Amino acid sequence: MSENTLWRFVPAEADAFHAEQDELHEANKPSQVTMNNEDEPLTDAIEQCRKIVERKQCAVVGGKMMDMQTASVIVQIYDKLGEPKQDAFASQPIERMSNLAWKMVARLSN
Image (cartoon, rainbow, N blue to C red; front, side):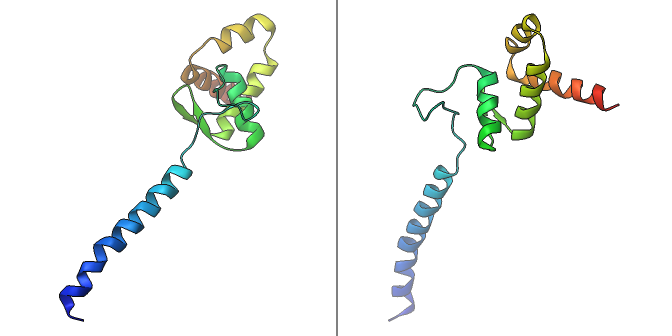
């Protein structure tokens, strides 16, 4: 086989390699958190955070990537609040909830 013949097989192998990499990438993509394996995503951010903590995984909440530690802090702060404050806290955007929760943690740790 000549050198030119060998190079003809490389693009096909490269395409197969890239297709396999694309499949792996899609399989490892974070997905919307769903309750009870339903197809509909959860609408309540607090419940999404509870599922993240329960599954011990990160997920997309409100269009932002949420890690397990931040979700745990949000849930713990929410559970400690009284009923009227829970409603006010849960009505905030997820970025604001995260910032408020970490500020409360910082105040308690000092």
